[in-house]
Figure: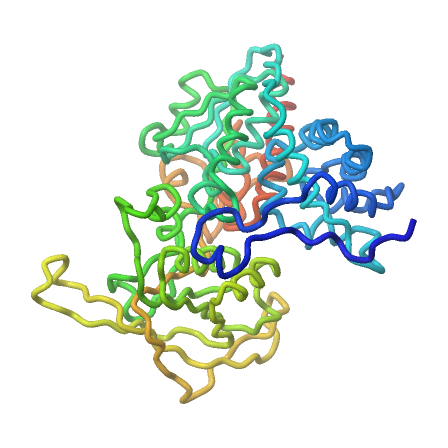
Length: 470
């Protein structure tokens, strides 16, 4: 049978419809499409796609089950190594990981591995009600700080081995960046909640509204009987440009903006914590978070949304699919531009704040690409005399985040690097005995799947450490 050179398209909502609702953009494969896409897999003996997966999912084996229509068996294969298959199938950058290694991709488009993973996970969640069996307890207790992808993965892998695991989450909903950082239209909250409930069924306890470093310290966790601690607290400290006007009202970090939308339900028709219903918005940055913020602003009623990025389209770090979706929805990209000042007005009679004014615009300067920088990308340099003002009343800074210093400041002997990332060795162990770390708390903002890989590594190391104490 001749191989289809192109992967099957993902069905999606129409751009002009989805731009005004928070329903999931991608609609998912049907069973027939999934089987047809699975048939494109060459079932290579050397399995190069597995080497591109940070959690080493047995990709050819689960795809082979899809070919035969054994969708639940395919799910069971994935779940042996991944605690969050429905999440990974939606938000992982497969194009730069497993799919980039696909042998079929040498001549044609690679197999749609991520789309097949999503299909299998959705099939399981919709069709299977049986809960996993709780493994026999092994008598050891482990605390996990943070319920994002690294924390949930670490907790899941340890629970499967019989550890009594408690996950501590600072916010009121478990899921970390999966619920507060990624919009509903990309990753529905019910999907994350389902994955969390599956972990709870394995015996994992989840304690919300607990801020480690304030409510409890890591030292106190050990006093409570935990024998090891994994820190997966993420990178929730937003970065700013330190340009004039960033204190004006109407300037948000992407973290605050997305959290208010996601967890404080600003997207409701009559929200308790509204962000906007109209106006013009500039989002500064070119990563996935910038795309999420811009597309969220559009759905919240913004009249016009700009992406302002200092490099060209080729250098945009966001996933190609997210960039294409944003463009289709009408977001305007001002590439090779960089902000130099946020403009505003001050109304001394406004009772809301007599000190700071409100955004009226953003002054930007045109950029051009010069010599490569340390990352290998051409360095953007300003074009003298090219400044002009963009008419906006909201500015969202999406230029990265750093690890929150709270845990570092309350944990004696915990070493961090100059950017605040926790220093670990090759086993995920920090400078403190029995304290492990991974994900964005170590690397700064990165991908969901890389955080999961870090959680998996730490779980393996914790198991080896505690097993040696028996």
